[in-house]
Length: 115
Image (cartoon, rainbow, N blue to C red; front, top):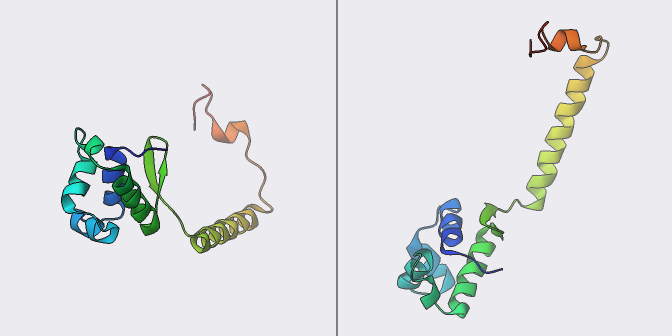
């Protein structure tokens, strides 16, 4: 997948990475970064430089997806989040135990609107 100038700029913003720092990490010039982030000049950058910048951004923690970019989450953070969500679910189930289940009358008024 080819990356766009908007994706490169967004990836750099997600990482809070100045152009100078990205250029240093990718071993390219700041002018190359500026060209990659500009709508009209992106095509003037070699594919080797573009791939190097992309790989540098991916190593820094972003993932390029169709029409966008997102932060990658390390596996240990995913596991910790899942564990927290499971604990919340168990605590919630324990609090609801023994209570009668909710009915439509509890949730909606006489006109079918949320109560």
